[in-house]
Amino acid sequence: MSDHELDDDEIDALTEIGYNLIEKILERAPFDAVKELVDSGAPLWYQDEEDGTSCLHAVAFIEDQKLIEYLIEKGAVWNAVDNLGITAGDICLSLNNEPCYRIICDAGIRSEYMLSLLASRGLQPEAQSSLLLRSNDATAAGSSSEFFSSRLRFTTDTNGQEICFVSAGGQEIGVMMGWEREIMRETVKQLCEDNVKSEGLNVLNVGFGLGIIDSLFQSLARPPKNHCIIEAHPDVLLHMRTNGWYDRPGVTIFEGKWQNYMESEQLLGFGGFDVVYTDTFSESYQGTFFEHVPDLLSGPDARFSFFNGLGATNALFYDVYTQLAELNLQNLGLHVTWSDVEVNLTALKETWGESRVYFGLNLYRLPIAKMTV
Image 1: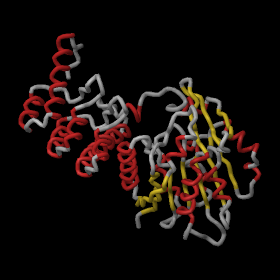
Image 2: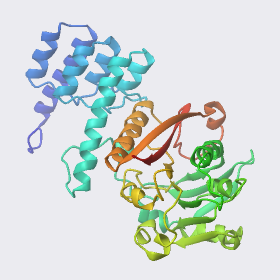
Image 3: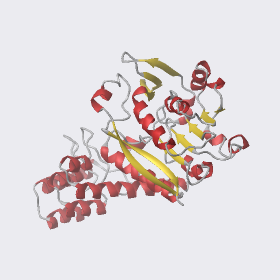
């Protein structure tokens, strides 16, 4: 589209042809009829005002694989959501149509990988990533600097669940919640089983939160020889001091952002880590921390994991970002294996209260990465 502002007549014309495109698809018009509308300038970004249906939603409903491929190639928006928050990929999943779903998912991976590559080179692409996933959120939920200057509230709900809240945009948002414990338990098991040293493991965790995973590391039959924790938020650090973490044998706490320690003698002096884990708030796991992991690991048997929660309120987004994480780690010489951890979604829905939901799927995909030999 050109840079000039559209007048009312142009907007009406685009709306009409965009609507017609969706109708033609839903009527199962011949491929050439749909192609003719696209060639005549039908906007592939258009969504019906009544229910938010896009051309990609429409073609997902009729399960036309050839047409999905064509519209994706021409620029249909892979991550468009309708008024109920449903993507075309969700429709494909509901119809159990794996080939059509895979086309849309692969388009998302290509798009997001290119955007992350451009961003890593300091370039600002004209196309923007999904607004649901990467909105310009200046609150504590989307800005690290705002998060570190915000007050946190530690509490226990009526079900006995520990919660750490931050206020963002007039809403309390869970930084970490007790329901994650079973995920963390399985993560520690896979990070540490058959990864045993007689003198104990060297463990690094970035982002303490409620201390769930750190408590699980400390509860191992053979606790870590060295257990390093990097934490920047002053309220979390106070919480750690109040609960005696500064006095635990073998525990070293690095106060500040992880970026300040990656090349420091304080951290590198431990000679590498057998286990590295990270779960930081309001940071993408595809950021620069991944780049440091190969230098932090002690050797080919050392293991790395992270809280795999980006996009986890939508199955399509979660698949895209899970596979994007794997690509990024592969590029760094790390091989990733995945396992599924069941999440009790019914019980989970009861835990949120007024907090914004950050995980809404039945399965958590747990990553374990090791250096490629």
